[in-house]
Every structure is written in C-alpha cells, then in structure tokens.
Amino acid sequence: MRLGLVGDTMLGRGVAERLLRDPSTVFADGVTEMIGEADIVVANLECCISDRGRRWPDPDKLFFFRAPPVAADMLRTLGVDCVTLANNHALDFGADALLDTLHHLDRVGISWVGAGPDRARAREPAILTHDGIRLAVIGMTDHPADFAAGPDRPGVAYVDLRSDGLGWVTDAIRGVDADLVLVTPHWGPNMVRRPVAPVRRAAAELVEAGADLVAGHSAHVFHGVEGRVLFDLGDFVDDYVVDGLLRNDLGLFFLVAMESGGPTRIEAVPVALDFAHTRPANRAEAAWIAERFGAACAEHGTEVERQGDRLVVDLAGATGRSTLGDRSAGEHHG
Image (cartoon, rainbow, N blue to C red; front, top):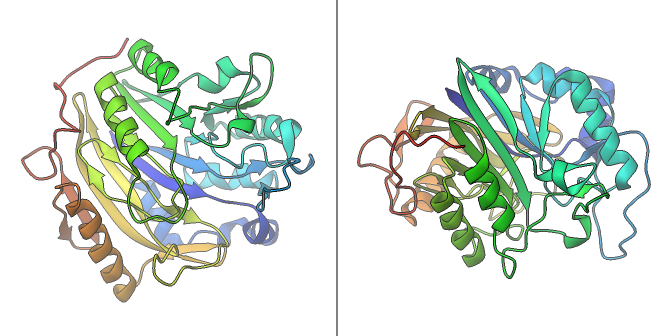
C-alpha cells in the first residue's frame, strides 16, 4: 500500500473564492499527479464545509474557515479518500456547519474521523481497504477543549496531552480490527520549528500502544521524521500570510510505503503554496525544502537521501530507524 498524506488543507476564505470560480485551479496538474501515485490519501481538513452556521462565540478566536459544498467534490476529484476533522476549525461555524460537513463528505464518498455528532462517533476509527489490507485511521486533537464532543453533543475527538494522557486513543489503537493503524493528531502550537515536549511524549505513547504510523499537523510548517512518526506534515493549501523565516508557503506531499509490519519507505515531494493554489516546487524552492527537511530529520537521528525530486527516508534498513519507531513486525490489531 502507498499511503498519501497531506497536512492542513484550508479551503475557506480566499481558497473558497477560487473554488467558487473554478475548483480545478486550486491544485496544479503536477500536484494532482503526485496524489495519483497513492493508493489511499488522508488529509487534515482545516475548515467546515457548509453554507450555514454562525461563528463560534469566542471573543479570542481570530480565524474562521468555511468552505462551500463544492469543496467536497473537489477533494473527491483530487483523490482524497479520508479526512480528519479533529482540529481547531471543525466548529468554526457551529454544530450545524459541522454536521453539514459530515453530510457533504458522505455525499461524495470521503471517509471522516476525528469529529462527529457525538463523542463515540468522533472517536471512532475509519477503516479503509486496499488490496485486502485494512487500514484504520484515528483522528485526535489537543485543542481547543471547547470543541470537544460530548455524549450527545457534536464536536471533535479531544485529548489533553498535558494532563489527561491518551487513554481513549490508546484503547482505540489496541481495540481496532485492522492490519495497519494510522493515528493523525492535530497537536502542538502553530509556527514552531520542531515538536514540543508534550507532542514527543505523546508520539512515543502512540507507537508503544501499537500505532503503525503517526502523522501529525498543526504547526503550519513541516517537521522531521523519527521512525514511525511524522511529527508535522505542514500545510497543503491555504491563503495564509507567509513567515519569511519559517516559510509556511513551502511544504511537502508525503508518500509512505506500508507493509504488514508498518512503514518501510517515506518519499517527501516538495510543493509550493501560492495564494489559494498549490503547485510543485521549483528548483530553488525544492533546494530550500530539502535542506530544511534534512536538518529537521537529523535532529531525530534520521537520514534523508535526495533521489530526483524526492526526499527519501528508508525505514526498511538501518537508515531512519530509531527507538521511538521500532516495534515487532507483522503485528495485527484487534
């Protein structure tokens, strides 16, 4: 199985305006071709999809992201199979807009995790199948607490990394009936170069519980790889202001080769985020991304090899192995 992973996919504001004009122009052909290499594609959908709702009543909340219903059709055409809604924008326009999001995703056949009409559904894994291999996807977020789903209240699959631990998440990993488990957390602060301590501790706990792959997001910039953990996938499409040092306008599309024992190879493909448009990175942009990704991985003892337009981490051999990512091969869940 080749698993495609993309980070924060924000389809509101300026991206929404482009979607309404011509959905086919949001992603360049080269990006569509990258995504077409994957058997299963999972993304973090950092907005609601609705034409209803009111802004979440928090005077300290600055950003509200809502995409038109055509966004769901665009994601399906792009090749996205599953999205996580466990993030700090799923309820930007309230419960009605979240429920609309679930409806529109169901309408186009995209699976969703990490949010739902109640707590049990928000925490429930999605099961995706390719060539008889069952992949479970679990979504979670550590912010905001106000968005947490209740027993009878729509919301997100929330965990407090600092105090509550990962009880329900580790239980879900151990209890799922699947060949492989992907956990995709929205965790940690925005605009930081590396994972903070609570994120690193949580990553180790998820791997220990049996996650075959952990793919995080939230920082808006990509982080390094350590064994089975991609700490942050970075952004994939948005209309955000660009930080000249962190370069949140330069990102990666991740292709992960998965076998019965977990991931064996990670290919990271450089992309560039223009305003409401994502395209393959040019030569200078790709060089910056390669240097930054190599340095970020080196902090975790992981080596990166450049192969053509790909940045490769070999998890099958000695390169890229780490204590954090090392578990027995062939483990079956459930």
